[in-house]
Amino acid sequence: MRHGKKFNHLGRKSAHRKAMLANMACSLIEHKRINTTLAKAKALRVYVEPLITKSKTDTTHSRRVVFSYLQNKEASSILFRDVAPKINDRPGGYTRIIKLNNRLGDNAQMAMIELVDFNELLLTEKSTKKKSTRRRGGKKKTDSTTTVATASTTETAEVVEETAAAEDATETVVPEAEIVEETAATEETTETVAPEADVVEETEAAEETTETVMPEAEIAEETAAAEETAETVMPEAEVVEETVATEETAEVVEEKDESSVESKEEDEKPTESEENIDDEKKE
Image (cartoon, rainbow, N blue to C red; front, side, top):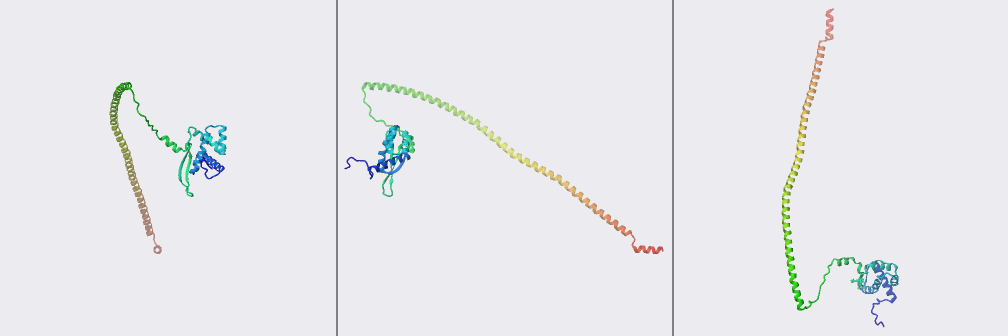
């Protein structure tokens, strides 16, 4: 009979169950988060948390005890080297179980088990939240003597508060006057600065206009010089044309003269018939 055996056997024999939980504990220590069924996650929490507590005391004996459960050198060294320093200040509760959706095949309830101190997202959210403290407890009854003493102390406290308030008021009035003076001074400076800015803008505009006018004047000068050069070139071309025309006319006249002289010479020469006639007459 199983009287008093409240832990979950997980449908396995003792050796199989221990081997499975040892493998799951090694995976959790290595990856810091694993997904499994809800029943196995609850059994793993009971198995691995005493080992994590054992890792807080880094001695040879505790290392040998943890290794006897895990049967894995790498997992035991990671537990003592990386995990133990982070959970050293936590008094238990090293793991967190989060329920997930049911498994598709057999509709088993799934869950994620993780080490609490290695979830950086939740740690940053908790650090940003402010702690709000509430105080509870009724007021205690006091004797008449204590009431008189408290009344006198409250009166003195009221007087001190009034004097402090008056001092604060005077202090606040003086800075207000200083602020008014500072604002007036700043307004005057802005007024003086504004005309200077206007003058600067006007000078910049004048410089820009002069810059724009200067190229126009240069362009006008260049055009005038080009026109003058064109005018000077034109008479020269006309003179050259006139000289060429006169030379051509002179050549034509000379040719005409030569042709007229030749024609005259030809006219003056007697023909052969005339020479024969003259010879006959002489005879």
